[in-house]
Image (cartoon, rainbow, N blue to C red):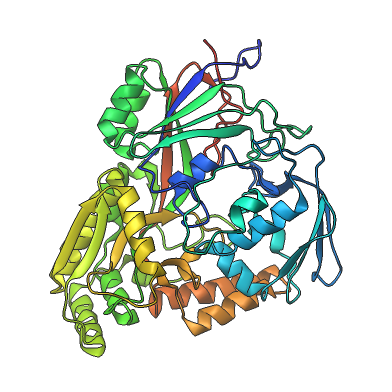
Amino acid sequence: MMEEAPDTGPKFGGIFRWTPQASVANLDPTRQTSFVTHSIVYQWYDYPFGWNLDRVAQEQMVDTWSVNDEATEYTFSLREGLEFHDGNPVTSEDVTASILRWKTTPGLPGTMWDLAEQPTVEAVDELTFKLNPGKPFGLWIPFWVSLPTYVMPKEVVEPLAISDIMTDYTGSGPFKYVEWIPGNRVVMDKNENYNPRSDEPNGDAGARIAYVDRVINLEVPDAATKLAALQTKQTDFAEGLPNDFYDTIVNSPGIKAVVIPQWARPQLGTNKRNPPLTSPKARLAIQAATDPEKYLSAAYGGPDLWDLGPCLWACGAQWGSDIGAEQYYEVDLEKARALWQEAVEETGFSGKMVLLTNTDYSDFYASALITKEILESLGAEVDFQVSDWATVISRKESANARDTVEEGDWHFYHTWGGPLDPITDSAIGQTWNGGYHNERIIELRDEFLNSTSLEEAKAITEEIQRIYFEEDPATIMYGWFKFVVAMQEDVQGYVPHKRILMQGLWLDR
């Protein structure tokens, strides 16, 4: 349990030292979906809507908004007094330019843009802008907040080509970018001119208050060193520590821990552009050879720190289901070998399987060792490439950006995500990791958006999950794990949330 803040209330000032869970590939959130990058830049950007503690959208930069009865026109008005870190006012043209950059982000943004049939956006006046879906689309706001548009100056984003990596990090949030030394640190300072909302803080919505003067995000690749730095008070906060460190953390004097349930779905990312993974049989083969409990135990510690189950969208949540449980739990190596051989013959593949992994995510590395063993048991030759997370992300994104698959391009890497429904699930989207192009599932996602009752929507999600496990797994998923966050006892104000938030944190020292 988190300690209640003392009656004296929050204190301003101090330097806060935070170690992220992995290395940083770049700080452009529109060119990747890496949780590490998004966690950092979240602190210095602002966004139209925030996600409250119930994961419901609340206005953030937006003051008021409306949608017409046909759900074909949204009108948004920004709050007055918003400024970028360079002192220039935030205008509706900055927001519309940011939306057009955001829509090219891999994963959910591109999926939303396609589902809404290529919306148009336009500035009406200095503070008002409109978004017009190409068809009725009444769920724009709840999906938009899942991977929100970070608002950037128009002059920063408009000149960028899709392949460009942005290097100007001017935002308008409660912190502002100071410097990035790759492989070492990211530094941000309190934005003294930030204009917070007047309502109470609620997740990453409401009033975003920066209490500390400076946040130093320190890269510490080795998990044991990261924990030691916390124990010796060289750092203040560590997120994503390996779950098998949990007992050590709770028994360390002066350190407190938080466990966030059903944090994310660990999975084996698959490149479906690259044979033999162009055939669903190859992915079905790996699924048939996979024992999810073995992966979860190796990667996430004791059984109280993870949950078994085939739920694609979190067991116990609205769309949780056990459809496909037979395939999820099944371990049949003979069946797997037969499917793998069929896929290899059908695609004419004769090379090595390129498995990317990294050591700064110990759970990914532990999982990759099991995957290597599975692939070799199927008769595959594995090119096991070990680096850091930044290199994994950079390599797979550069390969994904090419029009053609080249020799040596990646086949697999381990990752995780936290989708809540078929729309926010990038794994079954058409842009992430080369896309997933199962025609029936694409149709079903459209039907889900247009469903007229919860019963109808539930039946659709269950059919998607059936196809996923029985016919065409987009990734190989293992269940859901819980997330461990640790900090010094004098760190106050931390609120467990799907996003890592430096706002609201203060130091009782």
